[in-house]
Image (cartoon, rainbow, N blue to C red; front, side, top):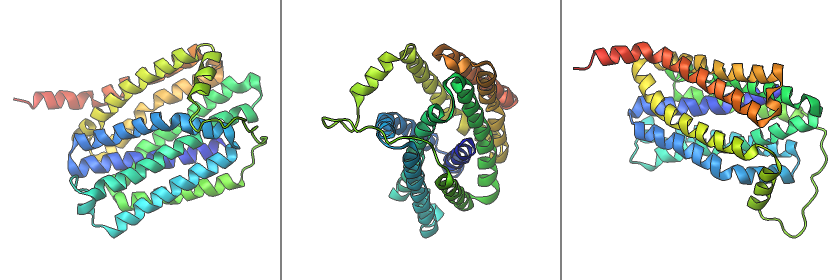
Length: 311
């Protein structure tokens, strides 16, 4: 399951990073990249409760297969659009095709989060309770590795191959991950059906679950501010980094910054920090601080050069 998660995460993030790089390099519009990134975070926040409800009411394996199929179809449609329309039309910010292809890729990337939610719950099915903290840390380590691979290869793909080949690679890897997932089996029972016509978006049930878990509300608040800082940071950093470096080098820089996630995940896996919300907060804080410091250090020389060149 970890191998499958790594492959799926690499594929989805690979195309999303590549789209951001491609849009900025071709349009030089910070607004366009900001809207793309902001829309992604907004839709993830909006649909997370719905995705969680779907995961609770259906077999986890079925949910992961459904999410993978939707993502594969979305990426395939985006690839077809890229083949049918000239690149100039797709990059026209005032035309419909730019927003359509970005929206389709966005949809596929957002739906993939339902797979991640389902896979997170699979830890409780496959791993004994006393080993949950270590398993969660291992999942975080895999996510960090996927981020490193994604960043580096997205920059290389866009810089050396172009967006067309990048789409083709993403479609092929998504199909490979789906095929591998179909061969896996998860020992799980059919979730019990709730009587009384439960709502599609069970907001009250989510609130009850948050209240029942000590420290979970504080963890959500922490994640909210963490994502806010990260969203602002990345929205500004990508255009700036692409002005300082070739896209291939900028992908490598982002890969270096992802080592913070590896440190946090490895610490959780070896020490069991992920057993408590406060431990997870400490791990994530250390990861984010390390990532931010690495990125600022990597671009520091460029900042100095840019400042010295101003008159």
